[in-house]
Picture 1: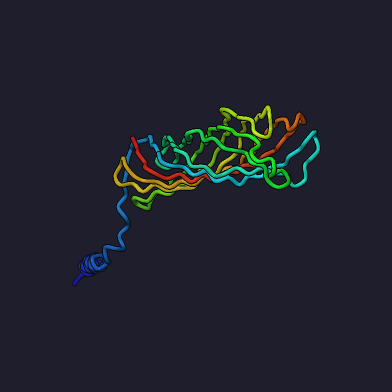
Picture 2: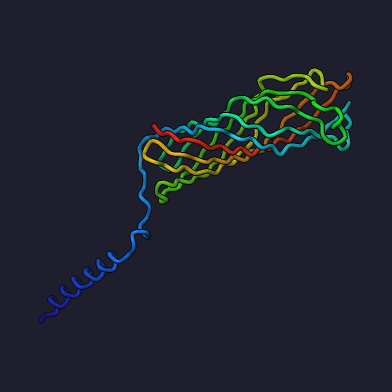
Length: 227
């Protein structure tokens, strides 16, 4: 038997052996089927919980008030994120919610004042995100971008002439889609924002200023739709 014939037979045996080994691999080891789509737009819609890590530095007539702070309760609102895939991995999006109304309550040495005032605000976030491929229907992502506190109205409490300022901060984002098909899926999204604002007013005619740290954690979940 010539060398060329031996080489050909050896290659055939190698191919058959490889095929047999592959056939013995359980189906559970196969990668999950990918859901591919060329639809560039997406919408996330569902409830959003806003959990604040609030505190404040309060001053009266320009002097700090020791131990004075504010308390703001967590809120639940309807939220929507609308985005566009620039590439299969990179997307930009805007997130907003139905404007909640919150009470600023005195805490610490000013707890006895009760409700300092009320504000209605619109939370908004712009993010750029990277979406990881290779996990089949499960599609995790991370992102970051600016966040905005937009005040639509305020109402006096213990403080009169209350004014809460709009502000801009920074937010990080992590989340995942689980796609049922190329259009529909479900998602969980978590954003951590670093956000500050200033509130001013009068307490018994004396000028009061509060530098308020909000730093909300926003947990958003619901349906994904691509189009």
